Length: 254
Image (tube, rainbow, N blue to C red):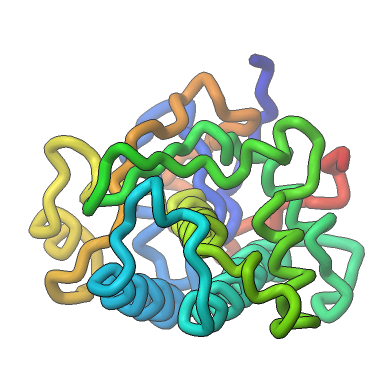
């Protein structure tokens, strides 16, 4: 795959670095790289904690993927709102023609044009027979089925309640997780073989106790899957008054 070279890092966007890839860790430690990271990741952990509590009543099995109810409905709505939030913040922190209040799912789809979202597959920690790849529809140039369901459910919860299923909820929270991995490549390491929470806490200025995700990563992107690469000299760049350069979403073909 041919790739485009970026000479400065962009906020909230991880791409492989052509030389000295470990320097990306130094870039991502900067507070300006991911503003409000702590708030965003705590919001996700809170949602996952509530989903774990749900698993005490509804077993996360294939047979129960179509299970629905008011608790699942509530979590599904909140998770989709969080999905919109994490996507929106990436675009807002970079360059795009539309104003933040006018962004829609069609704009968030641009993320799949610059990042191999569908290369991620997640499995539940409590049941590794169930795998989620919530962005596959975008690869087929289709609308995300679980997000379409969210659009229907939020406007008519009484009639649409049966569509607020456990499967849709888990696809939504898996999508949020993947978008976070897209921004914070280091954070995924604690869910990969050999990765430890101790390494995560000691290596970066974020501490979230001992909580882990409800997912393990069963597949993730390789360097060859990326359409963009960073190429900069960190020793020179860190002395620059402007370290980050906005990614130009206007240049991405929808």
